[in-house]
Image (cartoon, rainbow, N blue to C red):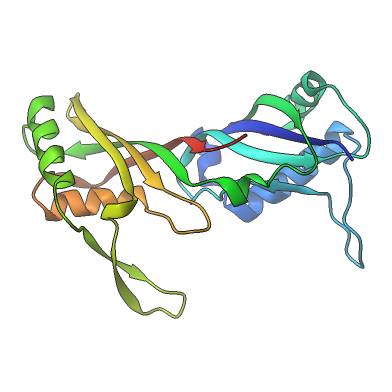
Length: 222
């Protein structure tokens, strides 16, 4: 059965859609678009499609990834057009291409995520000053942050090995941070953890709740 990979964006008010609701949204859109989607076997068959990595509620995504399995060939540009006509506002298809059926799922290969984080700052800070503080921050041998486990316990984790790149600039009273962080089945680093650690290291003084996060890419996506 042919398998297609599609990039899509989830922005604006759509960023507040939960991952479960996003799954339901795509299931409805695929059905309304009339795509010959393949279905799973069993008592409760469902259309076969999968995402690379769930987006947290409130985080926008510019290049999210979705695999769809069909029962017959469809031109990628037709998939783009048909889904684009029925997806709700804020969710837009991007590039679509066919991949071999034995291609690893996007969820199994994703190792990195790139984010753009905009955070309002409550004191004067120049781009040069921010860059210097980031260099000092990245020079730390470990960056410890608390994280809740599934059982509700608090665990301390060193996120420094999972911060692959970090840069920043100041723009109109806000710090704009570009982060390349660990993601995927082997573990992940959250952008808000990096911001919190920057604050604790006195590298950044922020206005509470003045945080906007956009995931701009997932890598690798073949």
